[in-house]
Length: 444
Image (cartoon, one colour):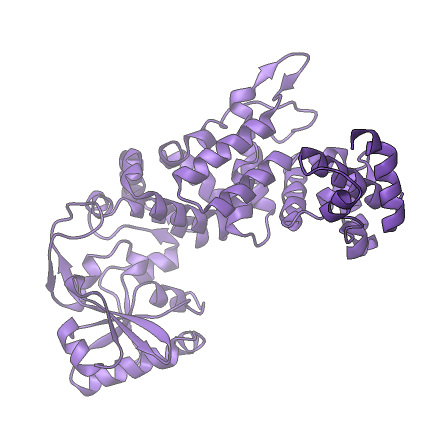
């Protein structure tokens, strides 16, 4: 197992901490998710350490390297060569009053520390000096059988921290685990209370689900377990909303949305949220006329995306990008008929790669026709950057010099000049000024 830990950048510092603790008579073990990953023959993202040394003893052993982050919960942060290492004292937790933090803790033993953790697969320890796995909760067997099981009473574990309800989904879909029946029952029973978790923690856990492996299954699990209506009722509303079969043979809006994630490659949080919300405007705009229609659903969906983004505490820039992706995802239907200037403006959008990928996924999750996607890619490859965004031929200073007064007309004139430039109709300052005189001279 040690070779998998050794591939983690924080491994040298973690070993330095373990050795120093052992040198002074303390027990020090790798703990939690890093042990799970190494057992799965995956290099952990980071290495957490658990010890019988108290925060006071940690401060005495690492006086120049300690950053106080949660001594009241037995947590010490040891910074070595610029890399932080979390070291937690073995503890037993008291009652949880706020759904996240214990009212009090008692320093204890590795076995008692394991019993306070969330799932058996995260409750194991590893001694890097002896190579011994210490498993008091049956985590190795559950990993072997691909089972996700809460430690002890699942209702108690989830009441302690409601975010664990979502973490259960993440571990199940990322690691392809089946939820043990008692654990599943507790998630369903308590799903309605997940909204008690802060918006920031919900957002971060949701993003881990929809940007990681098994994300389509994660969405379906959230719906099956009752978590989706508690977190994103707008997405839950997609379930059962029929679509015109000639365009969407795959099924309802939620089925279609999940299929985008089936086809997805690596994606940023912004793109993942746009994938999730690109058709969020369909349920409120559903009508049946000559066929099923969702008139104006892109604008309705973009407005809803902004509301959801603010509710989940995304940044203003992220919200703007997500809403832009939702609002423009049907523009690809018209790319072959667009004026050259309109098309170039669309293709040069700062986040156009995300627009292109969202369109690809939207097609693969429905009719499968990627011809417009291919058209855009070929167009981008054929156009040099200066043809997509040429330098301005004239500015407001030119307009002032020939007698125009500052005002809204400036924007109209400059837009028309850029259109003509993008269309290849003008190529220099003289032709630009001649066009201004011809089209706007009477409005001077």
